[in-house]
Length: 322
Image (cartoon, rainbow, N blue to C red; front, side, top):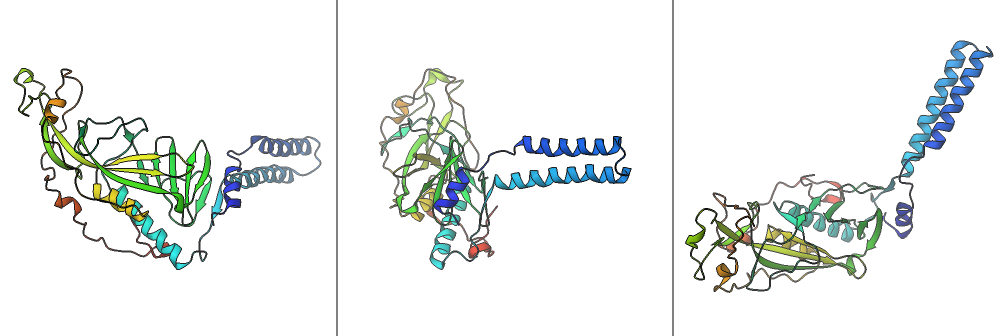
């Protein structure tokens, strides 16, 4: 299991296999075999056996060193029912979050829109949610994680680990805070299929929202989408901010960690957002219109997906799309 002692071993583990012992053992075996052959001390087959033994010693030494670069964590029979149930719930929430078509990491410098505002597409980079590699750790339970920028957050049965600069730092679940909110954005990049489009506006528009006739060639409609916003923080670790296309999945993840979630749409200030988005720079964005996108009716967003067939895996959790 993940204890303070195990975490210390993980952080102090050797990162690579040292070549010096391998070269020493392998070179010594070859030199010994060559001397035995030159002086005829042993028959030829015995000399070959010495050389082969040296190769086996090198392989054994390599495997021994390689094993020390990974610390194994075993949970079989070590989790009570409450911990196992909590871990299953968290895992399913992460699986649901991973099914979102668009998940982005937002740097701390990005200003989010206030209630009623519509913001341009923010500075962002793709984030990953799933069964991510855990460097130096091999657990016998599925470990889900969030990779956002230079940090990765891994969720174990006992608590979370934040991985930065090749080191793990513990994040107890009772100190982990997850906040959920919603925000309206002009989506100028590829439009996720599970995003809620609440309105459209022209790239170059008049104050009343109609298209500006001076920009006929490059004037396209820009979808205004409602995204879920997550902020994961703790007393000691860095803040992780995510923008999620599936707002329902983001809300479920936040609820799993005890956050109070309001699914009510922020009220939009109807007047003026088209005027605010008028630009003279024709190359400042890309069109992302799609056929068959979702209706702007908000009730569709809250409707739960039909349950998928449940298959019992380790700890009795539903086995997801690994």
